[in-house]
Image (cartoon, rainbow, N blue to C red):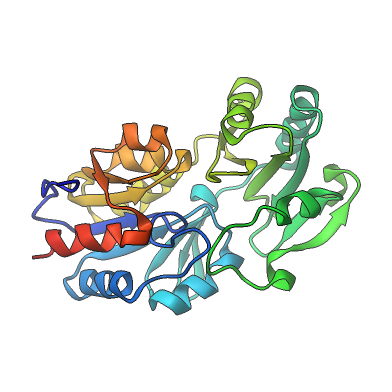
Length: 285
């Protein structure tokens, strides 16, 4: 049995990743998963979506799941109350730090191209969209006009203004995802938090230093008076590790990244087999 029933019987919160966890890559949310989310809410358990997606990528997921609670986006940089359509918390990278990160990574990874996320839009260097678009695998993605870059420039620094930068993205067509993450950790971890969530594309996701899915989920739990022991989390990639290690009980998805599997307490069935729903159904019995 992949999912031993060791979760706290005082379960009060579920933190779940989206892509590769409740959304199989390139697919949608199943009726079984939607029902499991709703069963948690009905039982008084808070469900929090915890994703690397920016806020503008959430509407298709909200529509598919009916989720009206809280969502942590951009790997912890921004927390939203979906019911009131309001920002609960926001962490950003300064323009100065973003510029220094870009400078260092251009030296370490010569083919790198950059983009940045603000709370409302993606801004990218020329060439980013061509490489990024060729490898998209997400399900429930917005249409290209909403999902693509609103502004482009030859150099990333030309895209900086007063809008907060909630996430930097570095893309390399000549690296593997883990190679690019290793470069990020070696060269810019003193300035920012580098991670990745793509199983195929070398996309380095860069957040404010010290900000992770785990730190922002912990902040929500503290606000609600919920102890880590009463939280169950689900994830599949390196950007989920801090969340998986923080919660009292954690599940990595079968077929997920080896580092996420090592970080989790247990292994759940795959996203395609409704793994999260299977586990929650057992816990809620």
